[in-house]
Length: 100
Image 1: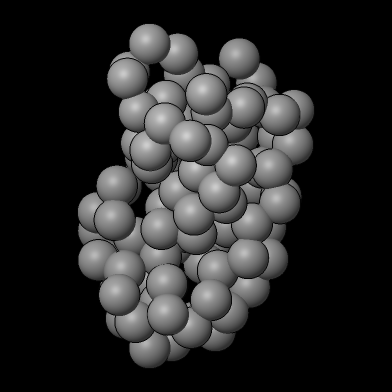
Image 2: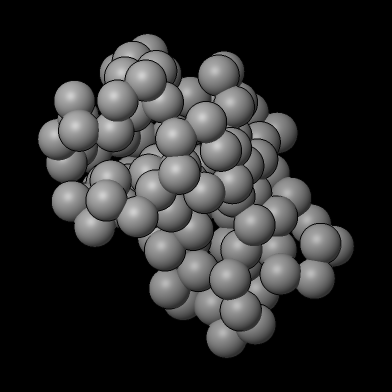
């Protein structure tokens, strides 16, 4: 089962940046890092992570439960820059706060 904590701290790595897909809510660098972070303790498979401008949605592998988090301003700037030129960003850490 995927746990939905109140706060999630995520580290976006160089590999996330290299393999991330600009403009993709599900496969961008931040979404890759989030999926790795929230799925690491799950025996049920990978979570679905979808990062939009202001919100992040995480769904468990069976799509039975989900949680919504705010995207902080520094992560929004990172995503904006990544979507325009993936090579303009460097590895970073972000903290997401659960809203629902």
